[in-house]
Length: 179
Image (cartoon, rainbow, N blue to C red; front, top):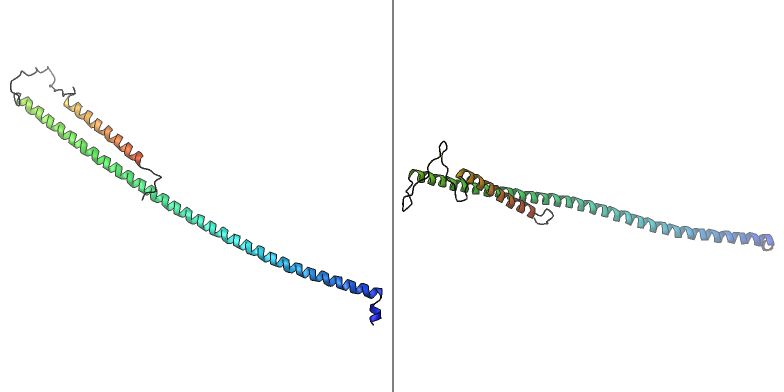
């Protein structure tokens, strides 16, 4: 039996069998190698997917937080501006009331001076003659009648308060991080 295997056909068959066994072993080793590589690539893929999901979640959370911060900042700015509006309006009304009160006192003093021309003077002086057809209106130090002086004062106060309001409004920083 061994003699039959020692002929050229037997040796060729054994060589083919050994070659096939070696090829099968190499294939199995390659399959194991590529399976390990595939598992490694799958693990890397899973890690990348997890990192991407985490990054996406972080960006969404940051966007929500930024939106909340923007709303809070806009609310802060609006509150500051309303406060400036109210303060300016109150100052304006107080200054107008004071100016009108002073104008009223001046009118009353002028009226009392007109009825008693000598009051408050040491020597009596002749009064101005009244112009025909119009009631005399005394001019103030600035040369304006009292009614026009009051209007000019009110407009000056209005402009002054407007300037203060504009300066205060522009001083509000909408990009400030203050809370």
